[in-house]
Image 1 (cartoon, one colour):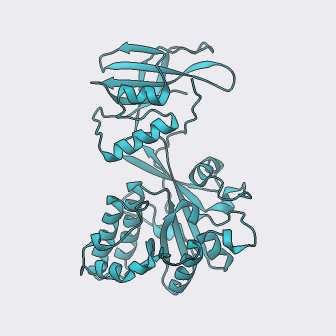
Image 2 (spheres, helix red, strand yellow):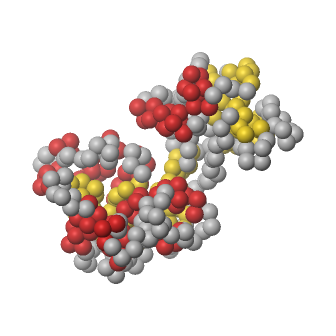
Image 3 (cartoon, one colour):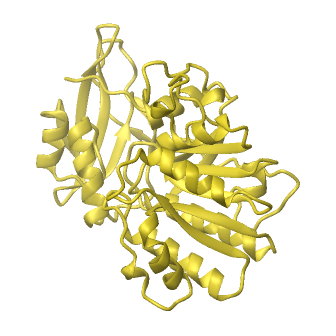
Length: 357
């Protein structure tokens, strides 16, 4: 059986710098950008919470009377269409967006930004990505576009996690440098935040801002951007200012589970389990299930066949009041077999996944 690593689930702890906000889970733009000219929010693409967070952060700032210039990974040749859509002259659907970036949540974010502009807020939205027809490095093009926006108004960008890296260790050659790194090398004040999603499937997630000065940030930074260059710095503080960690909302319950463990651990565990048995196998859920199968990780909503494909055959199968309970064992680095995952199935669908490593 394969050994799987998992990460701790954190509860929301957001810190504000002498400001109060309507939503406690939402960090403020003044906190994130500080005294810098440009704020870069990185994302792994395809996560709806990212677009929602960005939209809420921008909306709250301009509703408070602030002015902003927003830069997005949309091809610059779409600027005219983007301007028209922001004014409500053409549908948001008219904007052409790269398939990797495009999503329902991203379009809803654009609609929200359009609503702010039509309401007279001090906001402009800019397409900063390189057109496909132009043979130029995308980060170099984006650098040029962002520099042209810098002035008295703060500039906020939503781009891929890698482009929010302030120091990749790429060296003096500009060709390998990323967007935030390029801007920083110009002595432009840049603040950056990466984003990381804890493994698992759930309807609602909470977010925790972790400063890269925090010792636990290193794991998240490595997982969110990987090794973007051969000389990637070890110190998270030179890579980004912070990372936003998204975790499933859960509640701690105590339940007896039979454990097969060479270390003679007792058979009663306190485990984290999601509150609801309702599982929806929509496209978003199926995307997570496909990720789970590829990465050998159990996901709520899996069928029994998909769970076997991801983890192999279960060690034990039992019946309980809630449904069928499958336990899976893993072989750890110390040479011991232990129960690592417990899945509860109802009508053949996983309604609860317990990581007990």
